[in-house]
Image (tube, rainbow, N blue to C red; front, top):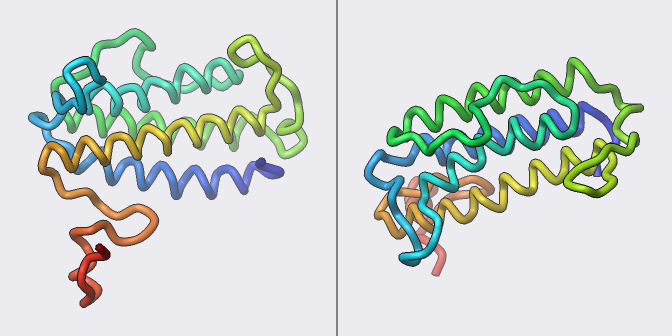
Length: 166
């Protein structure tokens, strides 16, 4: 749980940079990739991450310039990554500008429950990491190279002069 705004913004910068790296590796063609016929598309999941920043941030009392919550998934992967980059930057700036360390313990209404502001920030970040992981699976199915996030991806081990882990 976050005790300071700086703790969150440090995590947010690292995680949003990683998400942006993943989103920039998508292609327009890959956006239609699904695990199953009934499953969500890669484009849906990527856009869902973007929309959640404004939606969840708004419920937590932040004003973030973001695409409308009900907006359709763009056909362009670059449009998704640009929207994410702008919205993620705005979220980090808004938290720094509007909230203080003391406010993190305040209880707010989130989805019919009582959360602290710190829980809302942690939930937002964990939600993003969860869907980012789903995206990487769909990327592999779509034949895309997955960038490493917490270490080298399978395709990146050669850069370190090592064989990929089995």
